[in-house]
Length: 165
Image (cartoon, rainbow, N blue to C red; front, side, top):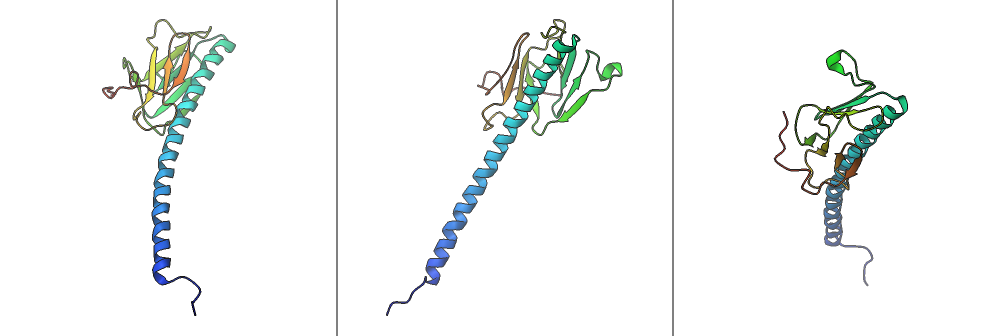
């Protein structure tokens, strides 16, 4: 008569296979979660820069955004902390950012009351996540005098030879 159930060897094989699948799934989920957070940070920074531009137009006065490696600050005027004015908002960044071209530290984005970049400041450039490899769908913000766009770094904008103080 044949007994019902599984043998000890069969149970151990099933537990071993499930353990391997669980380990692979956990590693994949962690990588997915990192990509998602990097993309979310890029989209958040993009939306706050856009909001600063809209505020400049609606309030008819210049606004300033200062981007550091680990945070960014929003100011309601062209005056900033060097003039004794505190930022309206300051947000920490989970993933460090860099900018191209690196002309000064921190990266200052200054909008005129009509929504274009200040001609006196050399604010045009690209803000990239420091580690562009393996991040989500978008990882850089391209800023020109009249346009702000979000995109996936294609290698030209996010170079490995970027140096930051």
